[in-house]
Length: 176
Image: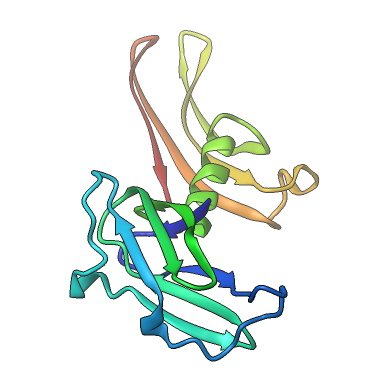
């Protein structure tokens, strides 16, 4: 399975060998047939806006590419009448955002579930002898050894709470 991002080029790499298992170079891109299916099953390889193209990288190694316009599981099959008439196929799982962004979101989510998490700079209000938290700073870290320091901070949040007597009326956490 290949992973991709909507509206960004996706690449499928493949090698072509002849009957003696020798790499076959110099095959014209137009000698290949490509079937490309959207997640809804619609075949779109002939649509110009999909931009399906094939290029030889070197010595019998090739690359097909296209730019998916939607998310979901796409399906691509590449055929060649002589070298692989049965086709070379793969699923392409397309997301709306890239994995670097998803990884950052996941790391922050883990931090907000209190993994590698530090609450400091706390402020309290006194209510009949009880201390009620009214604000503080939350910081999350990618590595436990840096928790509570100024190093390796993934994100910082401001915590604010309001009270009516001893009842919490609002609690807000805002990313800084």
